[in-house]
Image 1 (cartoon, one colour):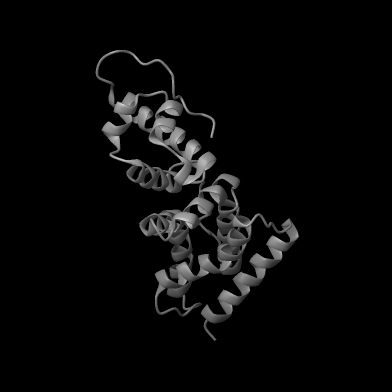
Image 2: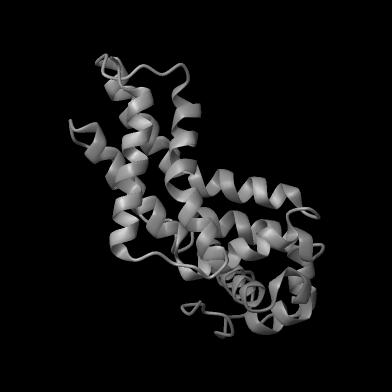
Length: 214
């Protein structure tokens, strides 16, 4: 997780809004580095403060404990970090092509090595910290959910698909296309590019068989 400005000297006095925002981003990035390297259990507030180049007092002034820090970092990472790449809007009349484009982007994001590492941590901590897993999935899928819902609503308005609940259908679609590859990646197993493409085409085809009007 390079790119952090932790440790950069800052001028004395009350920080500007821009400086405070940069400090928060830098702190989150540093904390994410430490969590990814050590897991939740192996991470200490002292290690985060040291990596971020701040005092423990400053860190505890922002977060009362490691749980609160991790929850904030997960929420940030899933929505604003490098994984939050632009989502294809599916701006085409071909619903299969539109959904395939979104699916391809969703799978690429799910297989980002650092995101896979974070998901491993969430899997290990799911029973003890269930709200983290719910938060991660919700925030991770949100932009993609909106893209899929936009495509499905457009084609439903044209009478080309028939769905009782667009939101539920979009969630089911994302689970279908990303669930398998993401689960394999957590265990260190990866498909070839050809296997990914075949999987995506089949997943889109299966979904549309149940969604298209007859």
